[in-house]
Amino acid sequence: MNKILLVEDNREVAGILFDYFECLDMELDYADNGELGLQLALEGNFDIIILDLMLPRMDGLTVCNKLRDAGNTTPVLMLTALDNREDMLAGFSHGADDYLTKPFDLEILEARMHALIKRYRGKIATTKIIAGPVTIDQKTRKAYRDEKPLALNPTTYTIL
Image (cartoon, rainbow, N blue to C red; front, top):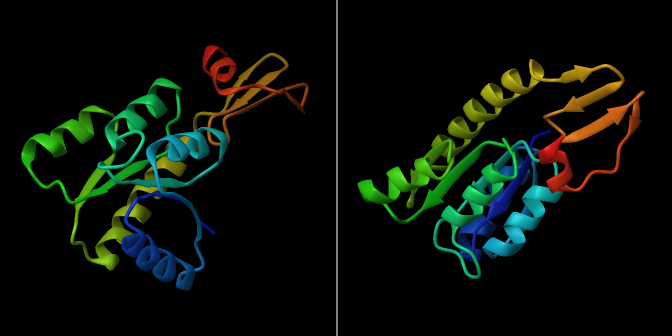
C-alpha cells in the first residue's frame, strides 16, 4: 500500500483526491498548510508527497527546499494552479521531482505518482548504507547500531 502525504489548502481538491486514492487502497495523510506539511513530511515515512505551491503559513517552494535541505529524498509532485514557465522552473529548482497543473486528470496524476514511486524505491533499494555496526536506511530515514534503532531527530540524521 502506498502512503501519500497531501499538502493542499483547497478542501475540494483534497476531498477529490482522498476519495480517488482510497478507492485504490492508498493511505493518505493530509496537511492544509505548509508548516504542518513540512512537519509531517519530516516526521513521517511517505512514498510520495503531493504539494501545492500556494499554501498558508509556508509556500510549497519553501517546504520543498526545507525538505531537501534536511536530506529528505521522498519524491515531491507539485500540484498547482500556477502554470507559467517560471513557476514550473522554480518548482524544479527547489527540489520537486514532477510538476502537474490544475485542472488535472486523476489517472495522469496516478500514473506520474507510480512512476516517481517506482524510481524512488529502486534508488532507495540500492542506497542502504552499512559502516561497521551502523546501518542507515535512507528509505525510512532511520539508523541502527548492532541492529538496535538509534533515536535521531532530523538534524542528527542529516549530520550522520
